[in-house]
Length: 312
Image 1 (tube, one colour):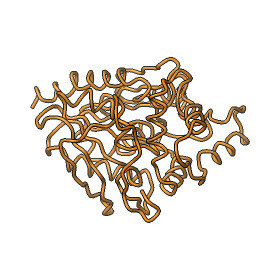
Image 2: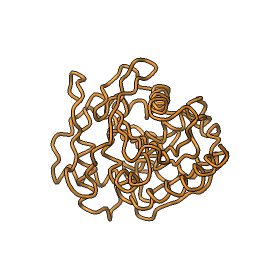
Image 3: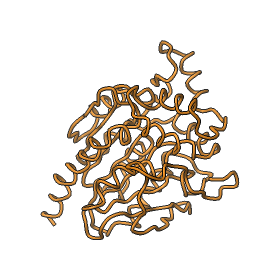
Image 4: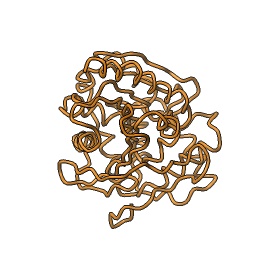
């Protein structure tokens, strides 16, 4: 996104397993307030559907590994959240806007009675929780996967600033995560900072590189605007409204949304079908542990989408 709000192609790796594949088709979904969302569809028409929502400062490129693995026998829908990737920024940055956008994407890509597995990472998981009461989610969600996410107290419980819990740590964390400073080009120092804040200590260099290019491709304005929304997020009550089978994945080395968030969500979910904690993995679970996340999505499709199709 440029400073003027014109969509730009997100920065990312251009080869290897973490390069995003070319979509079978692209389209624009129009949200409730007129926001125009960039949407990509991968894989064969008629295959079981999976809808993936990325997190803060990311883009459709974040799901490259899952798209490549799933698109052979699934129809994979990915979209850029407003202000990210190729979706223009909007004046409305809120949890309700995230839910509106998800409903618009589901309506634009799924048949009226079609069920899908919905997966969200970080802010994408918050999107799914924010939409828990929405007719669109209830009509289309066969099952949900929440990766590395939280529903409240995101700043207070972050471990990015290595201090004891308290007001000082909270203030410093808010300043760090809500910084308006430009990220600039990807450099060795920048990759070290990103790895510390968002990935596990054993993350492979190519995965750090992929995440750095995606995150550094997010424009400063939307990055700051959404940081303010996340700092004040409080959607605990909506977790209890997510009444479809829901699996949770978290990394034990996640500093942004430590495992306490995943455990709290899993305990509150009406139909929790498993909490997976990945030892030594940080916040970027779909990139750091792509095989695990992909297989969890496959399991949900096999178990719940097939059941829905048989009932129909």
